[in-house]
Length: 239
Image (cartoon, rainbow, N blue to C red; front, side):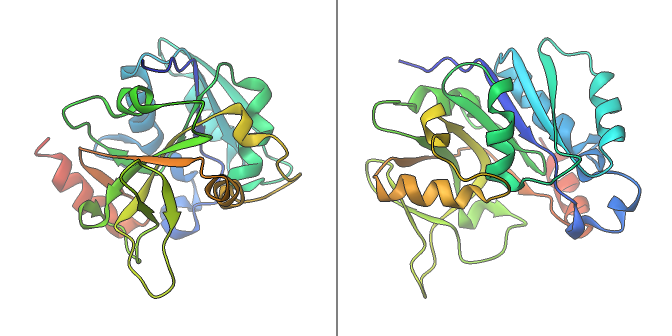
Protein backbone atom coordinates (compact mmCIF):
# COMPACT_ATOMS: atom_id res chain seq x y z
CA UNK A 1 0.00 0.00 0.00
CA UNK A 2 1.45 3.36 -1.04
CA UNK A 3 2.00 6.06 1.59
CA UNK A 4 0.10 9.30 1.18
CA UNK A 5 2.51 12.25 1.16
CA UNK A 6 0.75 15.44 2.24
CA UNK A 7 3.73 17.79 2.33
CA UNK A 8 7.29 18.27 1.16
CA UNK A 9 10.26 20.35 2.25
CA UNK A 10 12.73 21.79 -0.23
CA UNK A 11 16.13 22.47 1.34
CA UNK A 12 17.17 25.85 -0.10
CA UNK A 13 18.99 27.71 2.68
CA UNK A 14 22.62 26.90 1.82
CA UNK A 15 25.27 29.50 1.03
CA UNK A 16 26.07 28.08 -2.42
CA UNK A 17 29.83 28.47 -1.98
CA UNK A 18 30.69 25.78 -4.55
CA UNK A 19 28.54 27.55 -7.14
CA UNK A 20 30.49 30.83 -6.96
CA UNK A 21 30.72 33.22 -8.79
CA UNK A 22 27.13 32.54 -9.95
CA UNK A 23 25.90 32.85 -6.37
CA UNK A 24 27.50 36.25 -5.79
CA UNK A 25 24.21 37.93 -6.74
CA UNK A 26 21.60 35.17 -6.38
CA UNK A 27 20.94 32.24 -4.07
CA UNK A 28 21.94 28.87 -5.47
CA UNK A 29 18.34 27.66 -5.94
CA UNK A 30 17.83 30.50 -8.45
CA UNK A 31 20.82 29.58 -10.64
CA UNK A 32 19.35 28.66 -14.01
CA UNK A 33 19.92 25.20 -15.47
CA UNK A 34 18.15 23.90 -18.60
CA UNK A 35 15.97 26.96 -18.92
CA UNK A 36 14.76 27.39 -15.35
CA UNK A 37 16.03 27.99 -11.80
CA UNK A 38 17.26 24.90 -10.00
CA UNK A 39 14.48 25.02 -7.43
CA UNK A 40 11.82 24.93 -10.17
CA UNK A 41 13.05 21.50 -11.25
CA UNK A 42 12.35 20.25 -7.71
CA UNK A 43 8.97 21.97 -7.60
CA UNK A 44 8.04 20.40 -10.95
CA UNK A 45 8.70 16.91 -9.57
CA UNK A 46 6.72 17.66 -6.40
CA UNK A 47 3.83 18.95 -8.49
CA UNK A 48 3.89 15.85 -10.70
CA UNK A 49 3.60 13.68 -7.58
CA UNK A 50 0.43 15.49 -6.50
CA UNK A 51 1.71 16.82 -3.16
CA UNK A 52 -0.46 19.61 -1.74
CA UNK A 53 1.85 21.64 0.51
CA UNK A 54 5.52 22.67 0.28
CA UNK A 55 7.84 24.33 2.80
CA UNK A 56 11.05 26.00 1.61
CA UNK A 57 13.76 27.11 4.04
CA UNK A 58 15.62 30.33 3.23
CA UNK A 59 18.79 32.05 4.48
CA UNK A 60 21.23 33.49 1.91
CA UNK A 61 19.66 36.26 -0.24
CA UNK A 62 16.35 35.12 1.19
CA UNK A 63 14.33 38.04 -0.19
CA UNK A 64 15.12 37.06 -3.79
CA UNK A 65 14.13 33.45 -3.20
CA UNK A 66 10.93 34.43 -1.38
CA UNK A 67 9.95 36.75 -4.24
CA UNK A 68 10.48 33.96 -6.75
CA UNK A 69 8.35 31.57 -4.72
CA UNK A 70 5.61 34.16 -4.23
CA UNK A 71 5.30 34.45 -8.02
CA UNK A 72 4.81 30.70 -8.50
CA UNK A 73 1.53 29.51 -9.94
CA UNK A 74 1.34 26.00 -8.52
CA UNK A 75 -1.45 23.68 -7.40
CA UNK A 76 0.11 23.51 -3.92
CA UNK A 77 0.61 26.02 -1.12
CA UNK A 78 4.12 27.25 -0.30
CA UNK A 79 5.27 28.26 3.19
CA UNK A 80 8.63 29.74 4.19
CA UNK A 81 10.81 28.43 7.02
CA UNK A 82 12.93 31.49 7.83
CA UNK A 83 16.57 30.85 8.77
CA UNK A 84 17.81 34.40 8.15
CA UNK A 85 19.04 34.82 11.71
CA UNK A 86 20.81 31.45 11.90
CA UNK A 87 21.64 28.85 9.27
CA UNK A 88 20.55 25.55 10.80
CA UNK A 89 22.15 23.02 8.41
CA UNK A 90 20.14 20.13 7.02
CA UNK A 91 18.99 18.48 10.25
CA UNK A 92 18.29 21.68 12.12
CA UNK A 93 16.45 23.03 9.10
CA UNK A 94 14.07 20.07 9.11
CA UNK A 95 13.42 20.45 12.85
CA UNK A 96 12.66 24.18 12.42
CA UNK A 97 10.26 23.48 9.55
CA UNK A 98 8.45 20.55 11.19
CA UNK A 99 5.55 22.61 12.64
CA UNK A 100 4.81 23.87 9.10
CA UNK A 101 4.72 20.36 7.62
CA UNK A 102 1.65 18.14 7.68
CA UNK A 103 1.22 14.41 7.42
CA UNK A 104 3.55 11.48 7.96
CA UNK A 105 5.83 10.63 6.17
CA UNK A 106 7.26 13.91 4.81
CA UNK A 107 9.18 14.30 1.55
CA UNK A 108 12.55 16.09 1.82
CA UNK A 109 14.22 17.32 -1.39
CA UNK A 110 17.55 19.12 -1.88
CA UNK A 111 17.23 22.01 -4.32
CA UNK A 112 20.56 21.50 -6.12
CA UNK A 113 19.89 18.12 -7.77
CA UNK A 114 17.98 17.40 -10.95
CA UNK A 115 16.49 14.04 -11.76
CA UNK A 116 14.32 12.41 -14.38
CA UNK A 117 11.91 9.59 -13.73
CA UNK A 118 12.43 6.01 -14.81
CA UNK A 119 9.49 3.69 -15.49
CA UNK A 120 7.69 5.17 -12.46
CA UNK A 121 7.44 8.65 -10.93
CA UNK A 122 10.36 8.67 -8.48
CA UNK A 123 8.46 10.25 -5.58
CA UNK A 124 5.59 7.80 -6.02
CA UNK A 125 8.22 5.05 -6.19
CA UNK A 126 9.42 6.10 -2.73
CA UNK A 127 5.86 6.29 -1.42
CA UNK A 128 5.08 2.80 -2.68
CA UNK A 129 8.04 1.35 -0.76
CA UNK A 130 7.37 3.22 2.50
CA UNK A 131 6.74 1.10 5.57
CA UNK A 132 6.38 3.23 8.67
CA UNK A 133 6.50 0.23 10.99
CA UNK A 134 10.00 -0.70 9.85
CA UNK A 135 11.43 2.62 8.67
CA UNK A 136 12.37 6.00 10.12
CA UNK A 137 13.65 7.25 6.76
CA UNK A 138 13.66 5.96 3.18
CA UNK A 139 16.32 7.39 0.86
CA UNK A 140 16.25 7.54 -2.92
CA UNK A 141 19.67 6.22 -4.01
CA UNK A 142 21.43 5.90 -7.32
CA UNK A 143 24.25 3.58 -8.25
CA UNK A 144 27.53 5.45 -8.17
CA UNK A 145 28.29 4.58 -11.80
CA UNK A 146 25.11 6.41 -12.83
CA UNK A 147 25.52 9.46 -10.57
CA UNK A 148 26.33 12.20 -13.06
CA UNK A 149 28.67 14.85 -11.67
CA UNK A 150 29.18 13.16 -8.33
CA UNK A 151 32.67 12.43 -7.04
CA UNK A 152 33.83 10.43 -4.04
CA UNK A 153 33.56 6.86 -2.85
CA UNK A 154 29.78 6.60 -2.56
CA UNK A 155 27.60 6.93 0.51
CA UNK A 156 25.80 3.70 1.42
CA UNK A 157 25.69 -0.07 1.16
CA UNK A 158 22.22 -1.59 0.84
CA UNK A 159 21.27 -5.15 1.76
CA UNK A 160 18.69 -7.32 0.04
CA UNK A 161 15.90 -5.95 2.27
CA UNK A 162 16.84 -2.34 1.46
CA UNK A 163 18.43 -1.65 4.86
CA UNK A 164 21.34 0.81 4.67
CA UNK A 165 24.79 0.95 6.21
CA UNK A 166 27.58 3.48 5.82
CA UNK A 167 30.48 3.18 3.41
CA UNK A 168 33.19 1.25 5.18
CA UNK A 169 36.70 2.73 5.62
CA UNK A 170 38.86 2.07 2.60
CA UNK A 171 35.90 0.76 0.60
CA UNK A 172 33.78 2.11 -2.20
CA UNK A 173 30.05 2.11 -1.53
CA UNK A 174 27.83 1.35 -4.53
CA UNK A 175 25.06 3.83 -3.76
CA UNK A 176 24.92 7.64 -3.69
CA UNK A 177 22.21 9.65 -1.92
CA UNK A 178 20.22 11.68 -4.45
CA UNK A 179 19.02 14.36 -2.06
CA UNK A 180 15.48 12.94 -2.01
CA UNK A 181 14.06 11.08 1.00
CA UNK A 182 10.92 10.29 2.94
CA UNK A 183 11.18 10.77 6.71
CA UNK A 184 8.78 9.98 9.53
CA UNK A 185 8.00 12.54 12.18
CA UNK A 186 9.53 10.01 14.60
CA UNK A 187 12.84 10.43 12.72
CA UNK A 188 13.09 13.97 14.13
CA UNK A 189 12.07 13.18 17.72
CA UNK A 190 14.79 13.91 20.27
CA UNK A 191 16.90 15.73 17.67
CA UNK A 192 19.64 18.12 18.80
CA UNK A 193 18.87 21.82 19.17
CA UNK A 194 20.33 24.40 16.81
CA UNK A 195 22.38 23.65 13.68
CA UNK A 196 23.24 20.02 12.94
CA UNK A 197 23.62 17.64 10.01
CA UNK A 198 21.06 15.03 8.97
CA UNK A 199 23.95 12.56 9.24
CA UNK A 200 23.35 12.48 13.02
CA UNK A 201 19.78 11.28 12.47
CA UNK A 202 20.79 8.83 9.75
CA UNK A 203 23.41 7.27 12.03
CA UNK A 204 20.84 6.93 14.78
CA UNK A 205 18.43 5.23 12.36
CA UNK A 206 21.18 2.92 11.06
CA UNK A 207 22.00 1.85 14.63
CA UNK A 208 18.32 0.98 15.13
CA UNK A 209 18.12 -0.84 11.77
CA UNK A 210 15.54 1.68 10.54
CA UNK A 211 17.30 3.48 7.65
CA UNK A 212 16.27 2.11 4.26
CA UNK A 213 16.80 2.92 0.62
CA UNK A 214 15.37 2.30 -2.84
CA UNK A 215 17.23 2.51 -6.12
CA UNK A 216 16.46 5.33 -8.56
CA UNK A 217 15.69 4.08 -12.04
CA UNK A 218 16.02 7.38 -13.95
CA UNK A 219 18.79 9.91 -14.52
CA UNK A 220 20.25 12.03 -11.74
CA UNK A 221 22.57 15.04 -11.87
CA UNK A 222 24.57 16.67 -9.11
CA UNK A 223 24.61 20.32 -10.22
CA UNK A 224 26.85 21.61 -7.45
CA UNK A 225 29.34 23.74 -9.39
CA UNK A 226 29.25 26.04 -12.44
CA UNK A 227 31.20 23.43 -14.40
CA UNK A 228 28.38 20.91 -14.00
CA UNK A 229 25.74 23.09 -15.66
CA UNK A 230 26.71 22.59 -19.32
CA UNK A 231 27.07 18.76 -19.11
CA UNK A 232 23.74 18.54 -17.28
CA UNK A 233 22.02 20.69 -19.89
CA UNK A 234 23.51 18.61 -22.69
CA UNK A 235 22.23 15.40 -21.09
CA UNK A 236 18.79 16.84 -20.43
CA UNK A 237 18.54 18.03 -24.00
CA UNK A 238 17.96 14.44 -25.04
CA UNK A 239 15.20 13.85 -22.48
